[in-house]
Amino acid sequence: MNKIAPENYAGNEATPPGDFEIKDYLRLDLMPHFMCPGCGHGIALRALLWAIHELGIEKDNLAIVSGIGCSGRVGAYIDASTVHFTHGRPLALATGLKLARPELEVIVISGDGDCLAIGGNHLIHACRRNLDITCLMLNNEVYGMTGGQVSPTTSESMLTTTTTTGNMESAFDACKLAEAAGAGLVGREVTLQVPTLKNLIKEGIAYDGFSFLEIISDCTEVYGRKNDLGESPEMILKQKSDLRPEALYDTVDQPFRPNKMETGVLARSDRPEYGAAYRAHAGQNRGGDK
Image (cartoon, rainbow, N blue to C red; front, top):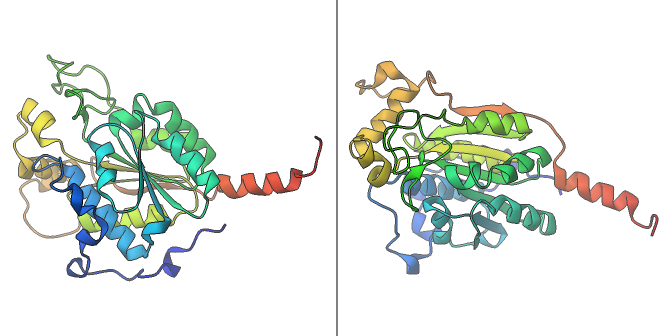
């Protein structure tokens, strides 16, 4: 099955935020949600649902697979076919699901610990295969739900419950890992820039192959408090300073120019999509040696 080109999706034109009703895509019976005030994961969820809305993806054709942690709980609120799977294994389940049901739009929501620590091997091989799955890794630099421990992306010198004198390890660059492992499309964006994040997610979903998108999120209650980073507005300003350090106190509304932290599409290739190649190979060999 060929992937639908982005320009051929229903509703591809930009939707004004006022025309997008997020409640149409949520399981309202599960409200109120569990996320802490100021959590960046809620912003990422809104951007994802906005992207799904603009792409015109029907709920019956949408499958959301998530793992363990705060990010893993996000998928449960989406009114679609959702699976909350074991720690580190959402990509493994998503692989089987996409191969069995190639017509589905399969999206994985994972966290930095879920995706890079216990799930790191699954990520590498998902990138290597280039199966048509979109993986959103919500990176808040900490195991927020399970106790505030250090994660593979925790910045150096930062405090967690398991690095009480500061983290001594280098942080993982997940995008470089995904690119090196062969992911067809690799990108990064911050929750500060919701329309830009929405557009990146749209591009990842529309791409015919494995898309790995790192979303820089904020954990205000666990990570922020532990490191005296302020509340949500202050942590959002830090995202701005990471993108363009000289603009930390610049209130002029202008596009951000990547500086310290690169954002947008970081890598793209034209590798064959694994599912189509697998089905073609199976068809050629059907009726062979028994």
